[in-house]
Length: 308
Image 1 (cartoon, rainbow, N blue to C red):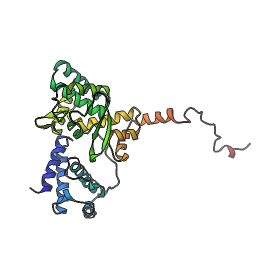
Image 2 (image 1 turned 135 degrees about the vertical axis):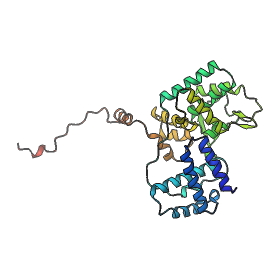
Image 3 (image 1 turned 45 degrees about the horizontal axis):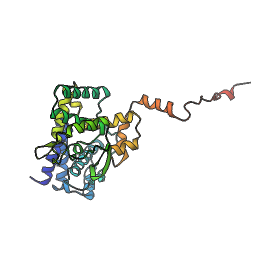
Image 4 (image 1 turned 180 degrees about the vertical axis):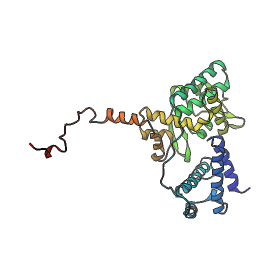
């Protein structure tokens, strides 16, 4: 099997397991990626920016929506390759970006999050043990700190220190960032860590390696089903989205959110500004410097035209 075929297969497996992509979505990704690979003579995974620009030229006769879909598939593919260490760079900014609306992320509302944590608390009480403590630590970190799935499952055993309320981790693109931890998350991780051998390199070990993203995805969906939440509505990434959206709704600054999520470009963070429009109106009315000033009385436009 060629390198492109192997890497495309690994990417599609990740999309099915972690992102919960539907079968038709997976098939569409496969068609677009294999088509691009054929255009580049089987060297898509090693393509540089110049080669990707040649793809854009080949796509010129296609509809804008089709080009946008193909480019989006390739961008996600190259992000996967960089995340997994198959290549050190991401050349996908050379791909075309046809104008169009960016899809909003799936988000859990507060009621769903409450149901999820109620089920988590029930399990810790009714079924105390290593599995319940591990699951609690995973969910508290996903929703409480907004970690990516890969960042979470690959946390070192001693990533969390008792004397500091934050993590320093190396995230996407090898960039370090500081991740604040809530008291709840610290307590949950501390309870779980007591059961992890001190010579174990991973905080969430599984066999000779750490917990896989596929298993994390399965655990999150199983918990959701038990909490009465449709499993298709949730994934580790959806909990990251919920972390970001609920912080923003609570008044978090967009720049601070960018740092917390580890986004290189604030434009990526701006997808979380899809808050209730009524809240935005209330924000302007309550926080604008002139909000408390009475509206000036202005003469009618037609006043001067009326006879004395």
